[in-house]
Length: 337
Ligand SMILES: [Zn+2]
Image 1 (cartoon, protein in one colour):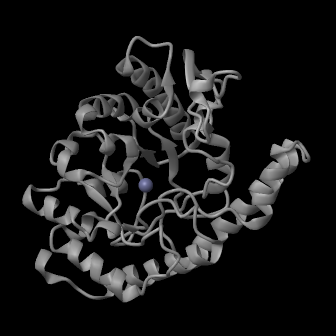
Image 2 (cartoon, helix red, strand yellow; image 1 turned 180 degrees about the vertical axis):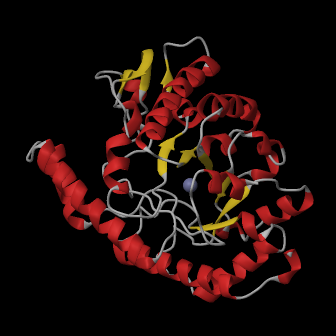
């Protein structure tokens, strides 16, 4: 089903397409440049020069590794929520003298109608796509997660805040489509963390995705999937990206019990551990997934963003992942055909 959609979009991918979740490690020179920019020691223009250099490095590296669907690696992003909140009117990032919000993780505060001032990710996506012939997946933080990780002081309730953010993420999605993006991922870790509000997560995703010519992926991160499955299948996307290797692939048990109907980006690499997995271990995990899923629906990626790993660790893990996917492509698995 989703293969047909990819074909209609003109995207030809091998079996077991490989991709990454979104963030990749920032090289040391960029970490330093970001710190210096924070202290106003360098200009935004020089910071952007380093961001582009790092993006070029990662695009080339992903191409060389043979990854099928690339990402820009989020060299310009720090926090996944603040990055979007800072580009929208209606958010205040921090208010001096408010003791209730002290602490190291200050949530953005919604104090007025939210409105993106201009497209937030399109230039970055276009730059990255210009560096490769392979498709580049655009990655946005989803409306439910933006709402859940902000403080709402403007809208009547959580639903109103969430739907207002969904409208803005829809505008961003449309701008990406106009620029040529065909695969877009919405990061919605909060949807799986808050089973009691799944209906709202689904409603917001309809606002973002309905009627657009895009292959949509939702990164749902880490469970508890047993509380939202199979209801989560009503989230209107083509592919769920789930973290699986840290919980011993438990999610496969659920998907086996009640028929799984979408494509699955199957996390096969633990992003918390610096240790590079053996390709054979990864291949074994993929074979376990194939006990439950049709071959055509399985995608291969790390559990989550690799931004917290070192460059060498991330390259090692991605390389092992590509080796495993290629090995699996070569070997037949007749049980599904
Ligand atoms: Zn994640």
